[in-house]
Image (cartoon, rainbow, N blue to C red):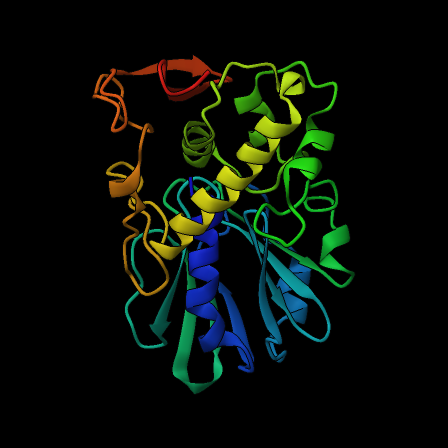
Length: 273
């Protein structure tokens, strides 16, 4: 699933091509997504100029003067820039036809992505209003994290993947951040000291920032690519994720893995406590 770095990479790629352009039309090639494509999107978006392309957690926001399109990539979705004359690819679901002959196409093989439309503040939308703080925003630090984790009895890995506590952190980067902070994924979230929260908050920021700088992570089974077709390369920097049985890059001990919250977790028994 595209996580925060992948969504931010796509945002940075499409922003210069979209801002200021007029949406000439919205074409639904196949609307069988996680939720039905809203009629308001088809009715209100054509004719509007895109004023900004923003991100909140794992959602992309295409703002116009009359409303905002909210896009979630789901498990396998991507946004791809193309010319209007470029033949459709398999799994192209939705297309924004823009002035100047440009098209923005939403491709989603597994159909878990979704498009939404709101005339109100998108941050008040039901999908966004209860999200936690942005880990890459100014002000996200150990104190903010400790407040979010207070009285939480679940494992720390599950806590930092809870979108109501920290927005945008998924399985890959949760495992990597916990390794960088030296915290085992099964530690009770509410038990972390101030110092450990400081280290973990910094690790979350650093890992996500490094992944964005690398264009995200492209794994063999997800086929993620940015809007210009470029794959991410943070996978070559991964310290624990997907490396079960391999030696830890720091101490040489075998990386462990286990199921945690229906996802596979990876950690080093020596470097993380």
